[in-house]
Length: 492
Image 1: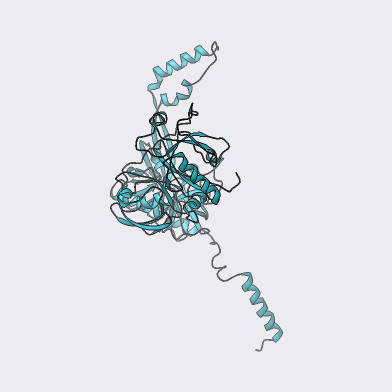
Image 2 (image 1 turned 30 degrees about the horizontal axis):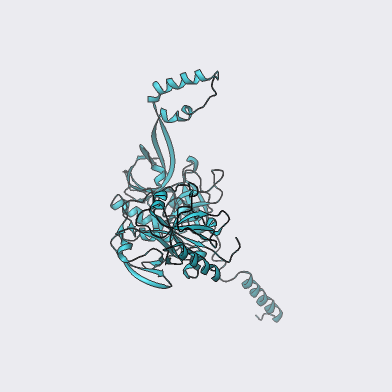
């Protein structure tokens, strides 16, 4: 049968309209028609976790013990008598507090993954299966820093288990499924997409969360996030919400991290982490300009632990770590995570940017034994009463500086090994104040040059201002080193 030319022309035109309306692959990438089959397969591997913790009555009465009443109040005697009774007899009584969370089976023999915060402090842990079977659980191991824990139950028959997937392959926009125990409603399934990757929400030193818009609520903690192949790509851990309920901002520990942590907990019961032995800070655009680095990237070394792996390898204060073991350090938050995941005693290449050149060093990774406590910073205690000898005003920075002397070391508690010039005055409207410099700070370097006198500082400040570039300062503050880039040629 011969197709009329007019009809053939119309069909061809319609075909091209279809192609332009639906680009290649668009139909193939549309959302799934449903999640029922996947959910039915995965639900038996997701468990509810109930914990019980004993709390003394005294803890429950702490708020009352701090109650303040006006002198002479008619209730004063009543509350005194009430508290005396509580502190005498009833404070010895104890009560049980319960909490709920989620978890998932990774081994048919009874190994279960959940969050550390779900089981922290629990006296009793009960795992509830999909068929309402209750099993007593013990903690195999836990890791507070990544908020992960591994439990063990002894089932009568093998349990349905799920496997970890590769979270490194999941992309923003991919569909995911979350199953958990929100508000005690066990076996609840929600769906959404990956909203972002590598999120840092300042919950710990190794933040690199997957963000999702799938509804996650209280009780979902420790539950799995699945990809469309039914593999666990994340452990649901946190939400950000002004109301306490889901607002579409939920975060999961990626499986690339969780798998390694869980395996160590299963085989060793604890975690061994790599240690470099440096303190680092963010490379801002001003700092990058001061170092002639170009685009801000990497992690700026502000101090090096004595006899640590970095010190032995020749890493120096002021180096910018650009890559570690072949992995690019896009920003400072990536370095602690990469180092921690590196095998202890492994020798790796570390690329650092130093005075305009990239230098490759070999570092033998140590073991992180304990994390240094953050030191509290004291507030400034006011100006120095009189200007010390040799004080010079550096107008470009809006500060005064003096050579280090025994009296200034005593006044500001500056160690004998610290060198540089000490800040004795900071103008409230100067650029130094804008960047947070304080009285008592010791400026050890300016423009990567050692400071031996206030005149050296003034010369570097004048040069930087003339060039219109930031002046990079190395500050010693209470034996804590940090870099500060003071910008010039910009509006304040």
